[in-house]
Image 1 (cartoon, rainbow, N blue to C red):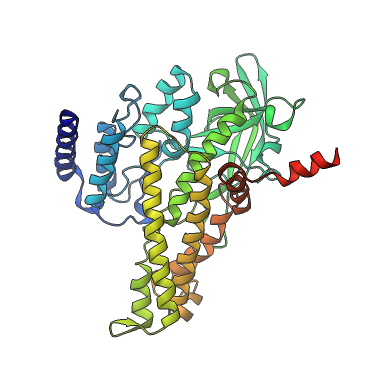
Image 2: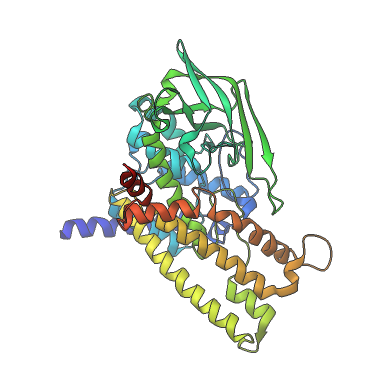
Amino acid sequence: MNMQLQALDDFRSAAREWLEENCPPSMRTPMVQEEIAWGGRNAHYENPESKIWLERMAEKGWTCPTWPAEFGGGGLNKEEAIILNEELRRINARPALTSFGISMLGPVLLEYGSHEQKMEHLPKIVRAEIRWCQGYSEPGSGSDLASLKTKAELQGDHYIINGSKIWTSYADKADWIFCLVRTDFEVPKHSGISFILFDMASKGVSTKPIQLISGASPFCETFFDDVKAPVENLVGRLNDGWTIAKRLLQHERTMISSFGLASGQSDRGGTTSTVDSVEGVAMRYRGDTDKLSDPVLRDDIAQFKIDSTTFALTSQRSVEESAQGQGPNATSSMLKNYGCELNKRRSELLMRAIGSQGLGWEGEGFEEHELLVTREWLRSKANSIEGGTSEIQLNVIAKRVLGLPDILSMSKTKKK
C-alpha cells in the first residue's frame, strides 16, 4: 500500500511539474467562446496558445487521459486520472479540447466498436484531427427518437443513406457524423435501428444552420441524399443501434449537466459564459457599499451559490465514479435535469441583477457583457429541451432511480 501511495505521490509531482512548464499563461484564465479548441480538419485558433496547449496535451494523451495508450489516450488508472483533474483545477487550466468525440462517441466506441474502428477513429479524436457531430433528432422524431425515419439500405459493400436530421450541433463545421439510421422497417421501432459513421464531406450531405432566438446558429438541419457509407462503418450489430444510442445519451446527458457548473462553460450548442459571477454582477448594479440593496435578490443569490457548490461536488463525485469504471447510468438524467435548471436560474438571476440593462439587443446604451447576459438568458431556455427534455429525464429518474411503477404499462395491464 505504501508503494502505491508513493507511486501516486510521484505521479502528482510529475504531473504538477509538467503542467507548470507546459500550460501557457492564457490557458489559465476563464474560457471565452471564441477561444474554445474544437479541433478538426478546418480548425481555427483565435488564440495561438490554444493550439499549443492542445498539441501538448494530445501528445501526452491527456485530452483523453483514461483511454488506453494503444488508442492514443493517456492510459491513466482511476487514481491517476483523479489526481490529474485536481492538478488541472489547481492552476485553473482550460479544457485543452472540446469534442463530441471525447464526450459522446469515444466512450461508446470503446465499449461497442471493433478493434479496427477503435484504431481508426480514437487516435484522431485524441489528437483533435476530426471534429464530430451527432445525427439523432429528426423533424418528426425528437423525444420519441425511436420513431426516426432516416434509412440506410445495404448495397454491396456500402449503405445508401437517405433522410434528414435536425438540431445537429455544429454540423456545418463537423468533419464526420455518428448517426442513427433505420435498417429494418418491418420490426418494432426500437429493433430496426443501426448506428453508423460517415464523412460529412461525402457526396449528398448538406447542412443548413438554424438561427436561434439568441441570434446564434449552433444547430443545423442536415440532409442525406443517397449518401454512401462503407459497411465497415457500422458500429455494433446490425439493427442493434438502439442499445448504443441509449448508452451514448447517458454520456451526452452527463456532459450537458456541466451547464449547471458555476463556470457557466458549455460543450454543446450554446454560448460559453464570459459574464462575471452572479454576485459580482449584482454588486455592480445593485450594490450598496458592501452588500446588495435588494434583500430578496441577495437571499436568492446565496441559495444559488449553495446549490451550485453542492452540484459541483456531486458532479465531481460522478466523474470519479466514472474513472473507477462504473460509467454513466440513470443518474446522468438527474445531473442533466438539475444542471440545466441551475443554469437557467443563473441566467434569471443575472437578468434580475442588471434590470433594464437586460432589455438591449444591439446598439448604443448597452455594454457588451449586458448584451451577452440577454442572449445567454434566451439561449438557456433550450437547456431543458436538448439532450432529452426535462419531462423525459424525470420519467427516467422515476423508473430507473426511484423504481416507481410505469403508470402507462399498469393501465394497459388493467385493460387486459
